[in-house]
Amino acid sequence: MKVQWRHEHEAQIRKHFHNRASHRLYEMFRDARNAGQRPYWIRHHIWNRLLEHWNSASYCNKCATTQRNKASEKGRTLHTSGSITTHEHALRMV
Image (cartoon, rainbow, N blue to C red; front, side, top):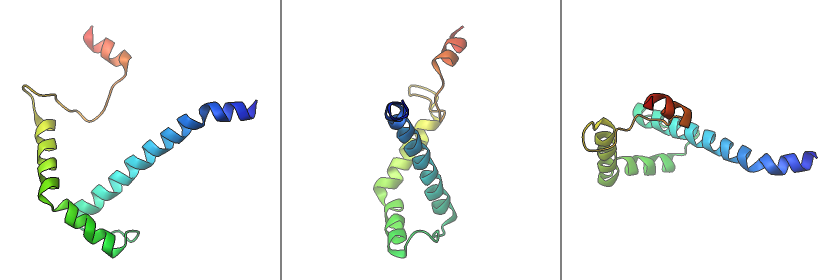
């Protein structure tokens, strides 16, 4: 019985863990980039490559496009950083 339960839920548990870990890593990189300070857990050569990437024209253009899309109120989708449940959609439509 235990083996069956583990097998049934292992994929969901793994997916949830990776989603949480990915989000946390994103936050840690964002905070380091905004502070302009290399965290102790990132080696110097990796930090230098990250700085090159963050300062590249393609990355800056992508950030500018994303920022415009998030601020858009006409003709485009308004991004509000998050999703809502089907139940919440139903409540808002009423």
